[in-house]
Length: 261
Image (cartoon, rainbow, N blue to C red; front, side, top):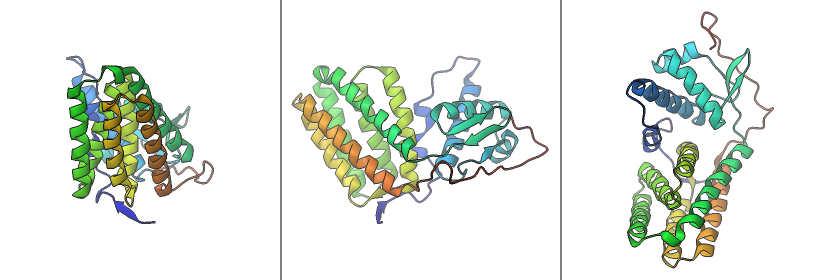
């Protein structure tokens, strides 16, 4: 199946850095929080790029050597990634890479889309011309990036556009959840790319959505989001190497001299 675009280095997530999502730390915890976010980002990238395979045991001592980070932020990052659904922590055994299957992607897309719909329902009546102008500019910039073959810039602008939609709802927690889910989706895109013409389809849909918002047409705006959701999910699933839960045995990377947690 032809892929129109994908990055040359899928391990790098500069367009989707955790810095956008990190909470503001207190004076005494800034270094720890930054290290946890950095560790989480590195391990997340390794999982989603396929460097760490489903079922692989994640031993902290080995992660210390690979990423040149201290054990404490690495342990915290594993707990954080467990909350994201990427890591499974088994009592008395340690942390393992979770199998990322079709259901994971479908659930991720569904939550992501419902957050946007929720935001539209809350915020469409209060949208201003300035906000519409910002969304229109992002849509135009995204189309220009796609036409120029600027994959990473397009990926970042795609995130920014939809984050702007969620921000209309005025719910900061919804925005944070959306960005976290989008980070995972973006990481999958970095690895698998898009199908032919899909990015231009996204560009058209953005312009259509902005016009629906300009007309205060909630039903049309929601329909556009749901059609985009269906097309995007189908496109990504076609590129995702589906792994059934029982098809990949756990592979344990041993370091007998190292503690497991």
